[in-house]
Image (cartoon, rainbow, N blue to C red; front, top):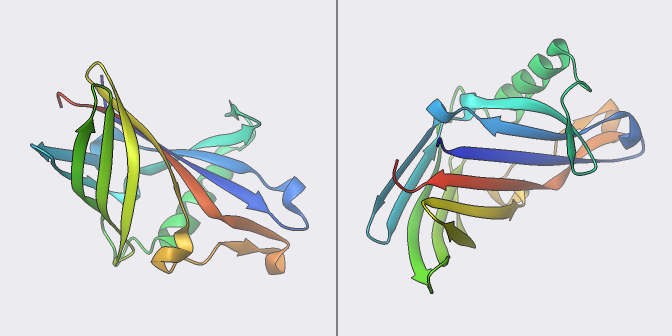
Length: 169
C-alpha cells in the first residue's frame, strides 16, 4: 500500500464563512522516505501537493470546489506560500526511536521554505504502517498566514499533517 500524507488547513476571519477549511494530499511520487536503523529522512516535493477538497466538519466535500478553484489554490500555494521556484523540497531528518511495540518517538528537524526548525512527535506502528498526526505552526518557518480580501479571509497559523507510511517501501 502506498505512502499517504494529508495536510489540513483552517480558515478564520470576518468572512471565513464564505471560505473553506481544506484537505490536501501529496501525490505518492512526491514522497521519499529512507530509514536506516533509528535514522529517518523524509523528502517531499511541494509541487506534488494537490487539493482534495473542502472539509465539512470531519468529512471531505470534494464537490465544494470546482477545478478552477482547486487550480487557483494550488497556484497560490506554490507561488505565494511555499515559493516552489526557490524551495524545491520539504525535508525532515531525525530519529525514530521505538517506545514499546507500537509507539515511535520521532525527533529531528523539518526544513520548510529553506528554514530548519526542530520537530518532535509520536508515531504509531500498526503492522507495516507507521501513522502520525502532527500540528505545525507555519510562522515558525517564516510563513505568514495567507490573507485575502484585506484579511477578512485568512488561514489560521496552524495546519495538521496526517502521515501514513508503509515501512516496507
